[in-house]
Amino acid sequence: MNSDEQLVAFSDPPTGVVRMRNGCVGVLVFAMVAASSAARADEVCGVTDNMLADGFEPANILPAYTLPGDATPLTLSIADPPDNAATGLDRIVLRGSFTGPPNTGIVAGDRVVAHSNTEFVTPPIALEPGANAITVQLHGIDGPGPSIVHHITYDPALAPRARVLPRTVSAMAPTAIAFDIALQPGEPLALTRIRLDTDGNGSIDVDTTNANALKATYLQPGLTKITGTATLDDTNPNTAPLQVPLATWFLAVHPQQTRYTLCSAFGTMRTRLAAQNVDGALNTLTIDMQERFEPFWTAIKPQLPTVAGELGTIIDARFSRGEAELLLARPNPGVPGTSNAFRVQWSRGTDGVWRIGAM
Image 1: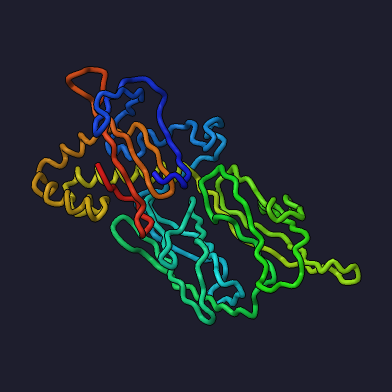
Image 2: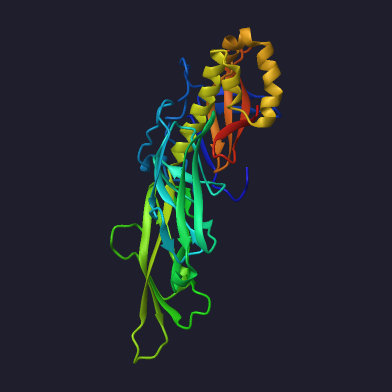
């Protein structure tokens, strides 16, 4: 795991003994082996436990997350800024909505885009003076889906004298973020006051003269438009201060979204193996893993339904924005009441889709 990313874990109440394998032979971990079902794509994933960064507050303060079905069609739209808009900003953030199955990735300007439920917000995308065409592309486990080319004209002459910039445009809820105020290069007036509505309810939440004190907490997942004003003044009492409007977006991502996506993605591999769909199952693996498993799965194709049924049950996991690890348990017939545990490591590719990188 990368130490600079938020790390979220989920597990069941301790009720049984699991014997670890893959580098942890002999270590006993207490975990509950979830009941098996036909597809078992949602095993353990509905369990509510302490998933928050501080480890003290229960995760049930968050609203429930509804997992989209595997057959959900891929659709995409961009709401802000509108197509063919002109801007004075040299970096633009696009906001939009989409639909798709659980393991859907979004890419804009060759960068992976954060999304939660059906909303997304892109990282800041650099613009060149003049006309810019930004491609926003949906991706599924089996390849690219719909795309939109969004047109933005960058005119430096329209540059605002001040703008608000969140330190990050997205993070897993609950989270706290800071904002910066950037003045136009060479701005002759001083920044003397900042007022921000950080939760989008129309009232001012931050009113300060200290540009280093711009912070907001987001306990609930969802997309928020932050608005406000920056006051610029020359300190001359005979001239009126200048009020510059501010606006930006922040997306608090539901942590259960990644949790359910990983379980669903593992279920996809298991279901495809059970159906002897080798090509489809290989799509759930990274390229390196595909090269290793293609000859193996092809050679044992008649036995794949049995293999799929013996992959184990998801009992625990941990994940960050781009990496994850699932812990699987398989009953140990030699020692009743215990199970052997195995790790499956995942990574989020440049297409935003989660795939298995080691198992």
